[in-house]
Length: 636
Image (tube, rainbow, N blue to C red; front, side, top):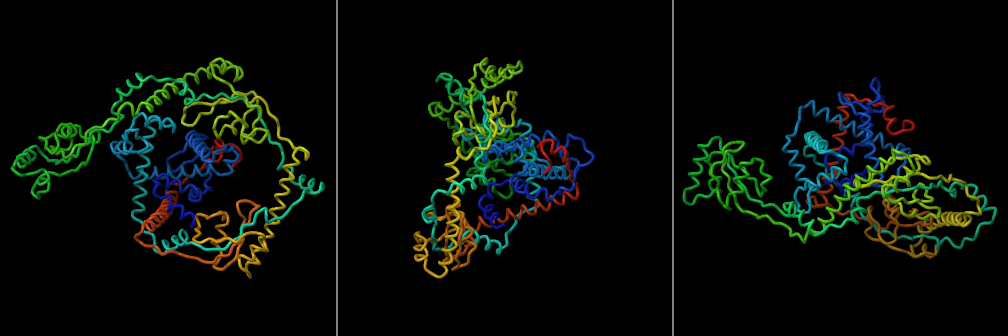
């Protein structure tokens, strides 16, 4: 629990509403109850919450997207059976059920968000800013393509998140963490320890000779699976990448300059003006205000501050023309010289006087400063079009039949043949197979395919290309005889002997350290004594293994302990000589970080209780057979 709180205090600022919901994934099924087995619905629905159904296709798309994200995070393929064993499908469905319940509740409450506010949030999202620092429509479209979203779908998703955020904020408000919890978390996060320690490694294990023939044979027979040859596959690969194609496309200075001139606004900062406005209910009140502003010595600031003035003042701050929602106000504001007031303007919300203070002129980056990036963008745009054309051509050819190599040759694409590769992407010599695209799910796909059978292409990251593959042959997994792997078996036997000796030596050294000094205990073990001051729970020092930190912080002052190091061939023996818990200044940044992190944890607990109450009110059902249809295999 404390470890989770510590992580939350470190990362809480980055967690918006979706982060809060994702934090509930692990407990969502506990809330909803797996016992509510799906009854009486068609096979096209995976789950139902109140009147909201989660369809099979919607869940399949979300599941595949989640699986691809996880594959990119871990950097290696995740077979379907392993994903099921991890409970990925149930975690995702739990999240979708929770969000569907919130959506149902939002509809019941009649909540909504104006289109203008959704658009403003999207325009101000840093993810969609171009090299000018402003909203970039091309970047926006590219990111949506990468995410697999259409613009209407993305806008609807942002609106959902904003509405969900309203619910969460109304539930939690301003939560304050108890001081006792803050003190406990401070101790967990900032407590330091001093210790004497000894690191024991292979040098302390002593000389280990070769095993006797009968020992080696017995050892091998008991561990045959460790030395088994994996299944290898021979595969033809065709890679179509926009990045690769872009490198072959030359863009002239004239072409880049033409694009620069056509999109000049994208390469600079638009003019900004300091705008105040006073909104009057009628034109007469506005005209009266104009006359008062003409009086000698009267400034706009004085008039706006006068207690008897009519109308309501609005300070828009430093804004661009596009940020002013009322076109009439925008036209007036950007026609005025600095420090001046407009004539009455008929706007959307009344008759308005507009005052402009300081003006920041438009700035535009010169062509030379953006030419390289611009040429790259143009080349990538052309490359993406080529990718689409070549993709269509190859897919058309595949419809006529033939091997991948034959068909790729017809459209001018190169084929690479990988003679042997295992599930981890390694060749028979144990090294990574050469010339394979960096695509984590490629290996799992290759090993799920049949020999000579056509397979769907796999999209490259960023949707900037495709990889086609065809399995040409299979070399089954087999048991290797001892003679083939003798050196590896002897190495493994020797490592096991070292590990066993070091474990016993660590135990004996710890007993000795209880009654002698660290120097004497280290000398007896053939190691050197070492010392640490200020050791923290979340980081190590020197050669002290991180795997031993938990053991150190579970040991009392003057206590002795042992722990395995980074591997079985490393052990550490230690004695805790000091424990320090720093005082926490309530006004410090560290105290604020802890306080805010705990508030986030409490928020999640409240949201979980709220979702549990929604389950009672709305009810939730799960179609196990439809769920299994998406993920395959038995129900987990």
